[in-house]
Image (cartoon, rainbow, N blue to C red; front, side):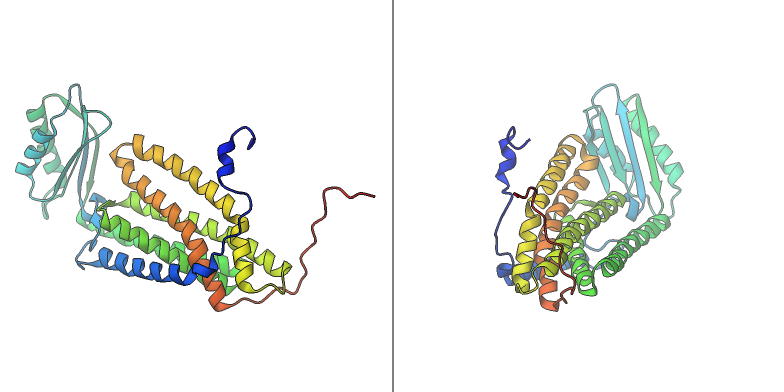
Length: 322
């Protein structure tokens, strides 16, 4: 396959990069980015989502998707909703000019069902015959429960990953993997806050996916590192880490690029509903690759690791001349 498609040869099969040599610089950059991400995410420290742009799922409100036989005037939709609601109003086109999606906050103490029926009637009066293909109403109490459940899911996922790595490898491997996960999650939150991407249940799903991808990439590096620690007992730990990362680098890059290409198509053709989630996932894949090299692996170097006493099984040549 590689002979027919030479683009695969852009990524060399064997590399000899000295990753550990730049670990201190990478650590300093990571610490600065983590602090900046935490500040951007948590400040101002106000309910319900601090510095994040909370979606209807966590803030409480209503989502309407409408369709018409003719193009929908978004300005008319926005003015109609602004005259009837006091909270934030978001209006955006969807796949075609004849489709639109609106989001607005439900006033506190109001009856969401009654308000939505009034708004639908007003939109039909202003725009003519339209059909509502989706109507989601989330109350403030439900949105608060969803927010807490989403954060609990993230914390539980990280905790379970620590236990998994601890049992499969050693405790220091688990600590390195969890530090990489915290790094990826915090920086992802920072990107969401910095670019004002909507923080919703879809965002929680995207972050959970990033956790899974980052852990998978870390496990691949750790698995090769464990094999090389048994095989090269006298080689310095820094050299073993570099060797292990280089041996898995081409696989990591090809896998990441394949996923990014698929997500790029989803971001371009998936419409505004999937755009934010696609961007978050693409950023998370890049972060997962970086953290496996410059967060998880350097923790092993700082903590140290005991070499296995069993000898590695020698590789047998494909053919032996008699």
